[in-house]
Length: 354
Length: 207
View 1 (cartoon, one colour):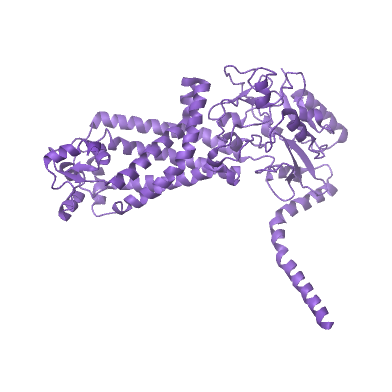
View 2 (cartoon, chains in turn purple, green):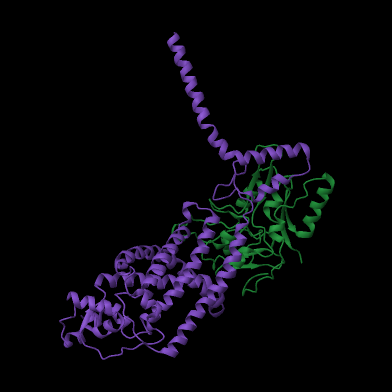
């Protein structure tokens, strides 16, 4: 019998200690709420007509004493003030400055093209080709590029379409365009995030700081003087685009994009407002930088587009734009087109027929 | 011209959820969508207060300002309505709304939320009054029938008032004078504190 009662006592002790152990946890979480409640009780006695503590809770958000029969995300929040802040930021600086930034970038590129024209090769083509981008490089680049362009166009439609496209196309047609934009954006987005990761690992090894990069940077690659400055496989401008654009902005838009694309994880409105602001700012910067990249990769420079389209460049191009890389490739005898006859070179220019 | 507003008297609301039920019944709203809800502050504490909340039909409505397709419009009576045919279900109105009024029928993986649904002040939508299409998308158009919103009409304690701003404000003022307390007009600063935005000039929109 004493053994049994001892056991009872020890069980009781165990129970009590358990309660003691876990009691402070919810108490700590509810501490603020309890204080509010106490304040309310006190106010009822001292100033029965003054309901200030209650009205403070209207904007206070969620705590255990604020309830609703309606279940859902933040249904117990009566007024969320952050929505107005989000509205002011999105409809204000993001739309106004973001929009003008893109217009300015396009205008600057137009002016630059008018002044400098297409940057042509300084010497005649050698007819010998060097492989610059292998098949995998090109698949990764174009998957990322195509998904980026889709996201940029659909994203811009969502942010600026109301001011630009809606007056042109009217409510019904623009609504269809916006529906298509939203759906494409939400499904292509995750694909772009995947591409960004693959892109990083594909190109990172040639985007690390190398000797000679500083010299290129101080002369800005001769972009304005027309004098070519030697660089490795990628010059420092391309490396900046890789680190700041593809990697940094790519990760930011991807992460914030996922937050916005999957509201089914019951994240609150404030989370999505912040994600939206960060997403929009980085996306506008991303598009502005990409415009420069696309310009130099297409109409801005001779043979730049062909290098990513066909994967090969003429030796003259390599020597003029990426001399260190050219020397490296020649030195290693790795040149794919090194032994290629001029006849073969003309066939390679056909690209897809190869 | 009357300016339609909602006013909830927190001294009278007894958290019966009659307004929520009346709304769901009147408009045959699907599961998971609640155009109106009742929130209780300091539940279980002496002096607890309940407030019924839905779309307040703001003067300068944030939903209207952020909608990327401009699907919202305001009637001449100040009721904020939207066109579900134009709505793309992006959820921006839900981010912006201070009262949590915009509702979506789906949970939204890949942003597939469906068309936004919210309180219409029982004023239907852009379709012709009393048409089947209007009822299916927006519910009953009681204002066109000469009636006030079902939630306010149904309220047993007359805590929830819905109607012409001047009339309901007068009723409330009389109550405050008689009882000598509870003068806070909940949500009015947020909803009607800014200058009225002119009704959007949208083609085909009813006034």
